Image (cartoon, rainbow, N blue to C red; front, side, top):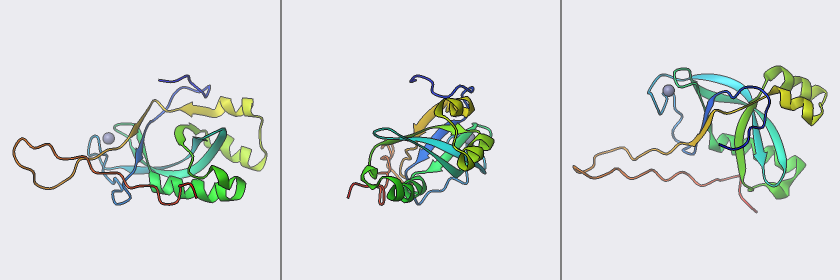
Length: 158
Ligand SMILES: [Zn+2]
């Protein structure tokens, strides 16, 4: 685990879903029915951009896990970077924390110094990229292959 960034206790396990056709109305880990949780996600985009995206995540309360759909995240990031810095579109990025809602909305109206924002950030407890194995029938002893994640459509270098 890397160095902790925000000052608040770590919160949420986070999963990034790379399959546009799977929406996880059930949790991939425990099969519990998921709900929704709208939260500002904090994203680092190479080389040095911090972006807070208010995003409706899937949420499993049994696993305390947020699930974000990669295609939606990349769509929102692309829209945002078209306006601020198009040459960064397609760069590596990492979703790594949530921002407290109240601090986030106050910061939108009235931007706060970076140091102050650190007091309102929860790093994730864990991070995973979801990988599913193929459904269907397989011969005895055959291991189902991993489903190939969809390539990025919008968040790509032009
Ligand atoms: Zn779960």
